[in-house]
Image 1 (cartoon, one colour):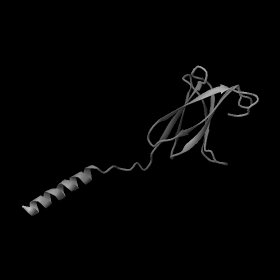
Image 2 (tube, helix red, strand yellow):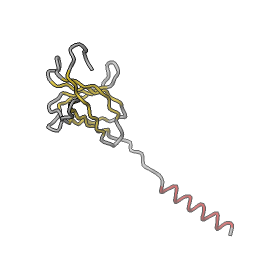
Image 3 (cartoon, helix red, strand yellow):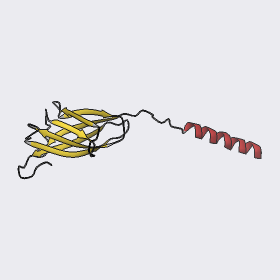
Image 4 (cartoon, one colour):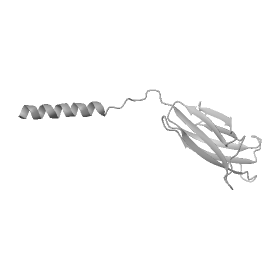
Length: 127
């Protein structure tokens, strides 16, 4: 009786341990969407220039693009990261609207970050 009980416990433990194993994704993707809206009325901004970069000097990861008719631009990276986001409306050298934010990427999950552009104040350069 004792040996049978121990055998049942071992078999159940083996089944539970085999069933609970998860395979590690050795090549995850980190897709993300930046959506640009106006701060005052949350209108989607089309054709806004968006740049995404690591907040360190001379960083290699750098993405740029323009928003579509829904105010969105899509990017994809291959590592876990936190990026800075800047969006401009108007000429980049002298934009009329600007936004700054950050985005935290998650493995195999499409992260959507909404940034809100505000009218540029000539007295305050940047964000």
